[in-house]
Amino acid sequence: MQRKQYPIRVVARRTGLTPHVIRMWEKRYSAVTPTRTATNRRLYSETDIERLLLLRHATEIGYSIGQVAQLSTQRLMTITAQAQAAAIVPAPDGSRSSGTNNAAQSQEANPQVHLEKCLQAIRQLDAAELDAALRRAAVSLSRPVLLEQLVSPLMQTVGDLWREGQLRIVHEHVASSVVRAFLASLDGAFQVAETAPTLIVTTPSGQWHEIGALLAACAAAADGWRVVYLGPSLPAEEIAGAVERHHAKAVALSIVYPGDDPRLGLELQKLRRYLPTHTILVGGRVADQYIEFLDAINAVRLGDLSAFRTALQALRSQQPTDS
Image (cartoon, rainbow, N blue to C red; front, side, top):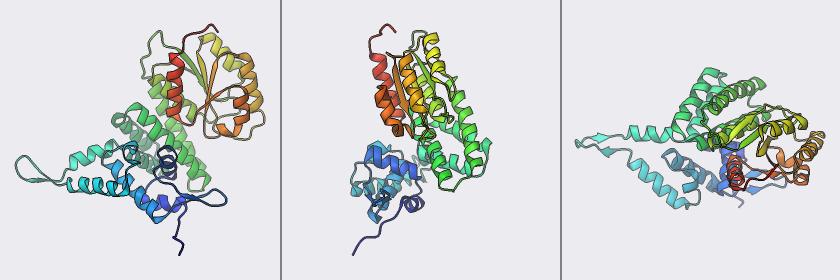
């Protein structure tokens, strides 16, 4: 008898995880391995769902997904059971304590909890609460975790829900405007050394979605780069001019939407002609749809913010060259 399998939207509903988090845990950490249909859609078994629930509980009690993703299901059951048993512990005076403070601290350190609160505010079109939720997360989470495990998944999830018809365009607009202002406030908070290398961050002409570029700008600034953020949709000539004016070491481009612009390849080719020796870093959810052009200009293709930060570290360690 064939075991029943479920699409990702059902798994998300049963586990309380967003589809983006499920895909990220699968792709980055191999936490589960769903089967695939002939059209490449994911299908999950009851065993997969049980494991995802255990992983969610483990992250809620303070573990990072990287710490627990490769543990056996039996081990996951053990650590979650131990955490539940420890929720009621003897207090120093011999009375019983519920461990509420420890649980609350674990919740505050869990990006998934903050993600759900942000999504709730977006669904309610509550811009003030979304801003407050992001700022609470900024206090509780380290900067890399804030950007890589909260803000980036949040905006990707909003985009997914909009395409699936679960959110309207007004929800996407509220999310984008609040997150844009929040990231801009973060970017201005970093102190950068005078000797820090300069990075130009923007999106190519025709790419108007700038959240990915803002995330990259904040991540680079947090890592000690002097960031010049140019805003979205700039032609190659303007990008190259900014590189020369600021004596930048590299250019970072975000490509999010659309994924089928016939003019973008020409823009990338022009940029490489203007900047024959500079490093061009390119990321974004549809960047791979332009892989032919990116390979042709020898761009460094990035899968996520973690890869972006790794590339920046490698670039910074290179010996300076005349440009």
